[in-house]
Image 1: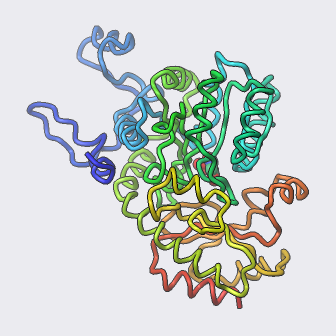
Image 2 (image 1 turned 45 degrees about the vertical axis):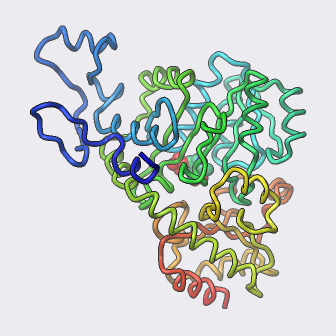
Image 3 (image 1 turned 135 degrees about the vertical axis):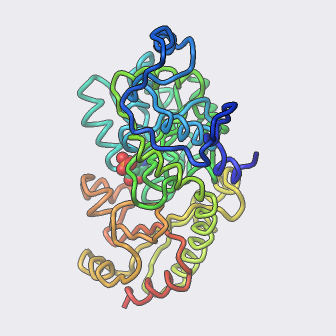
Length: 393
Ligand SMILES: Cc1ncc(COP(=O)(O)O)c(C=O)c1O
């Protein structure tokens, strides 16, 4: 099956002779399961037969969603977790268990991911270093110097939308015995599948493109065979699992995800082109523009004319007051924290995703106080452009 068909069919409609087959996997709101003989549950606990015993370990709704996401990300196994952050937490813990406890991270990461590394992993003895992940010489030198157990990057960085050469970094990671972990939230598997490029682990905030409707907080850890076993083992102990109702919502969302992302990608190209010509905009960050610093890597790794649906831009000569005025003037675009939903959303990184990063460090990373991040939705493009234009005043 091809990608769109997999999104519709994978995980669902398991056939069992003589039994009715639901067209959509039901919500198994059951904490535990039993069988007509104790011998069966003994075999389930021993993993001798496939089955369900306790929903912290496994649940049929979760299993259906996990199979679907594994199929989309070309993973051996997937764990659906309670949030994107819990996905990162368990993925990092599992990958570091039998490796040198040093994480070499991209210097442009979601703010809470940086906090997770510095405020949670460091006190437990893990060390971190940060590198410009788009500078391959710098990455090679950092691997040589720091001997990381894990290299962590985002497939499209937040909020300046830089794209690192995941395939080349995967080669370097493998040569050094390190695990390459890619947060694929911003790109999503319709655009790039890091495991196919040599990464070991992919994490997602399922809250974003995959679920897509702003009604779920969730995450995924998708792994090759070697890395999935410790993730599942840890999950059975920690229990950071996604509830079956959220699994159901996510699965329902993913069925239309390829259609949504196609429309969002096309709308984003039009928004970026419009903003690049706009007199009130001094700079646009979008991987599809010739001016983008990673245009060559994007052309090599991403499908033609699909650059994701995130567009960042700087409002000309604007300070905080002017940026606030722009947000307050928006009529249709939703000024809420998140991305990847069906509706277009605007976020001000200085007060939201990158709020806890000191102003000087933000400036060093190129995040200016007049930067706005847009997540382009599926609305009619004329309405998106008209709302932006009227908000510029
Ligand atoms: C790239 C990225 N990774 C991880 C997360 C965390 O996801 P969640 O909010 O679902 O915990 C986010 C949230 O915005 C994100 O943007």
